[in-house]
Image (tube, rainbow, N blue to C red; front, side, top):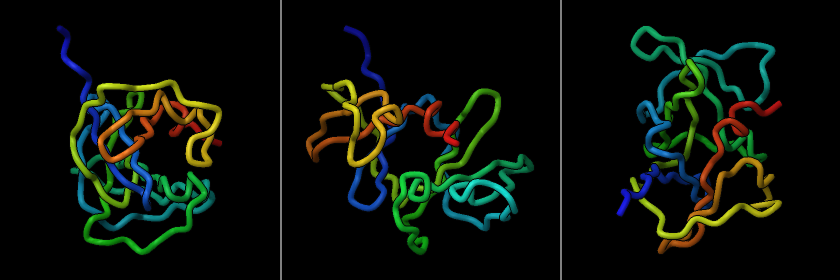
Length: 140
């Protein structure tokens, strides 16, 4: 029997999403972001992560959700993307999990383009959209 892939599950508003654990560099608390003029609205700016400049994106903005003030639960999920690292702001990180059943995404999931997802995981708490990082991070 092969080991199941692990995912980090996180929330934005009432929706649950996940990223493969091997794509995650680290998860950090919210910190000051240096804004950069002239970038896409969902690019919030950059942070200094132990001497490395890391761009930070807002999934809320990218997914067309209204921005909310950051809370004590807000986190930056730093993911490995190609040769770089990118930070993704999420409302909360829930848990590390596995899915017994992952189904192919439909044309749309929760009002979002199905190409943003590699699959939909079925969990005890409902459906979890498993993000396709290439599609999410390369949005125009």
